[in-house]
Amino acid sequence: YMIQTENNFELGGISIGVAMNSVDYYTNGDRDAETEISKEVMIEQAKTIVNQILTRLRQNDALKAVPIVFGVFRQTSKDDIGGGVYVLEATSVEGTEITNWTNVNQKVTVLPLVNEAATEESTAFENFKTEVQNFFPNLSGVTARVKYQDNVAKKMVVDIMTQFYGESEIIALAQHVTDAANKYLSKTTPVEVRISSINGMEAFLMQDLTQGVFTYHI
Figure 1 (cartoon, rainbow, N blue to C red):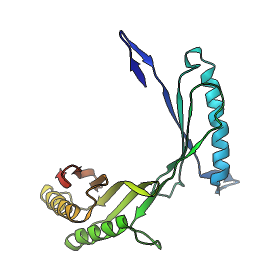
Figure 2 (figure 1 turned 135 degrees about the horizontal axis):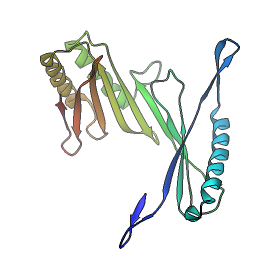
Figure 3 (figure 1 turned 90 degrees about the vertical axis):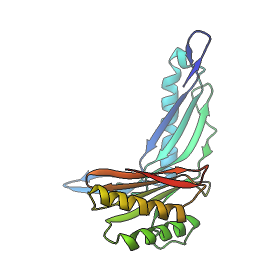
Figure 4 (figure 1 turned 90 degrees about the horizontal axis):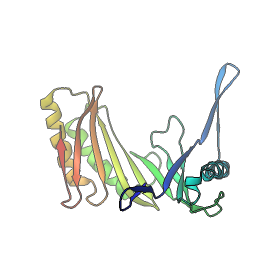
């Protein structure tokens, strides 16, 4: 990021994300194979890689004393629809080694839950899903992802797949989804609702947290 000076801009800091694998995919002979990478091994590798990157950056005279923030992101397996999370962060003000790391407590939960205890978010989603599918039982799927930070829900993204293509059908679906969202989904946690077909995005719901209401846009 840049800081505005009296006549120009100067470099104020750098933010770098380092994405680490949780699964190693490789070929064993003529067969595809995979090996899970433990979180502990991944973290040790990430710390080594970050210090290597930091050393290279500090070799540039312009970056000798620029604050550099690193975030370590743990990617999920290819078949995991939840997505990865950040697990570590650290800031280097100067020097070529980071020794003080902060653990980041994030997780992503995919709804509907399977063999897991119900949560406030999952209960609200199940009520929303039931309401929508009772009126539109032929929907291809209604799922959601909830991102948690320190065990507090920070964002929910709801995806609805539909076979409808006509404008009047999409409008009717969007109106009903909006009613159900206003009835069941959180008014304090940011929520995105996306209605899609094989043609792509058909509609999405906008949320006004200050008013506690959803509106739709085709």
